[in-house]
Image (cartoon, rainbow over all chains, first blue to last red; front, side):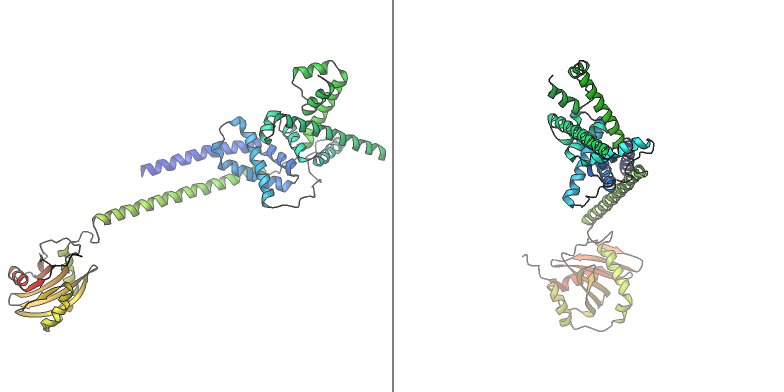
Length: 184
Length: 240
């Protein structure tokens, strides 16, 4: 009886410590993870799903996360796997990209809003292999090495993709600007 | 650092912490201009990528964990109940192993209970059974009753907690006695003599069977026992 109560108590105290770790993880990373998921799959509802699946899996395997500093990369790796699994399960027809009311631009001036909105559309035109490392670098502030480790690529490949991503983006912006001038 | 290498590196990371990269920016205004443009692009890009997150996402993530945690806790409890049930089952089996079938009862007290249970029915039987008929029943215990100078008032198979036995009531000069004939492997403990307020009895171990005698308290058992031992005979069970 004493042993049983002891085991229950131990189980509950371990559980609550795990719960606290999970809550800290959610609070620190849920927003970044959602945004990353959106720029990965280009769909808000799927991004939402992916984040939920990711945290559920993270909770189940929380004991395998030993280094707090590695948490972000660990979560991103889980989310990428969940995303890949989505394609194994079923090929969705999500070609229609949501472009309306995507973004919280309310604090920007109308001119800035137009610029940001255009940049968002151009980002979605980039191939995912260029878009993904750029999001990890610019939005999540990850270093080249961290990105390489998450994407399971070598550092040179990551740098090349980052180079091409910015290069293409600038070209797309220039083309749009040119079109804008011609129409104006 | 040539132009191509500079562009490759500044485009892959405009912040350019590398001292060699910083040096070449310092020495070349066109390169400094390109870095500024790229930093500006990153700044705008950061704003553009920073899309709104659903208001309730955080709350849903915390809730989903609490549900999962509750489920896990419940599973753990079920597991504990399972263990407790298994332990109880094992204890039960262990007890059975050491006290097979008859919890705390010996042959004598069970025989007494049997007599009480059937007392009224037994008293109403007052016919004499032919010896041949009795011996037909005895045959299944490989037994025989020699000439009995009295009468067999009742002879019937009955079950002694799963053990098939022969239930006899004998009237003789020495009085009335109830006899249970049990095969040797009945599994009960032989108690020798036993008694309560109304009856007393004893068990007899013969060569081929065990007998349990029960008689009214006021009757002498010894002469009955001696007589029965003489007149009942059982073949030894063949060892297979």
